[in-house]
Image (cartoon, rainbow, N blue to C red; front, side):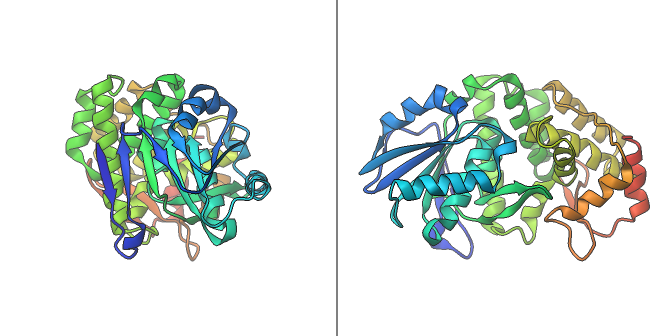
Length: 347
């Protein structure tokens, strides 16, 4: 299966997302594979056996969201220089969203930009993080505040990699699938209600549908000036949750699940969704053991953290909210009192 991303203003940067089609990768240049010890243990040998290149190197970085920072980027850059990579060289991201984001960001700044390939090994990365060219790292002020838009040369999603995922990692990816269905595709959401994604064939269908959705959105809006913002449904709240817990308590998809619950409570107060719809979304998240509860320590502090998010502008917070199941609303002018009231429900 194959999905194409056709960028409206950058036709020379169009690329394909391949699902279960990775056989051989041939490069007439130097290649470095960026991965971590956890992924390497399961998949590195297999991937290296499929790559043909002038020189092939492996760069291993620590595993975990807490290492998604400029210190790790400097380490990857150092390894690139030590191995004498040049402007024709290619980086390959072998891992989840953290590896993909850091490898892409490194590729975007190494010698003013080289090509990179995504080989995502988590469900979350396959349906979301590897597609669309968002790259970057976290800072003490918030998530992904340092980065760039840098599209990959290709993306290879192999469902066989998902068999080695811990249950939590797998469920975290499902949160991203549900997120896209709620805001873009009522029919797909209803399909998810009636099919178990843990079944292999259903999983392939869900991945394909999610990738097609994201590819369409990215093709229309590469740099998140309009419709691509909708993919941040749940993220505005989730990024604060992750920051408050120092990126150590929740996987990103788990934080997104909590963020969806919070966003839905706000949407319910604004009359954008019904109580029945809110319950249906919550039930679908719960089916895959995703967290739906979070204890806000201080509603005021949580609210102030919103302004460190990339989506805030001119002292206004942009919220992505569902408009019934299958629709969305990009909402900026929401009274602080209403938001605080929602947050106090979680105190």
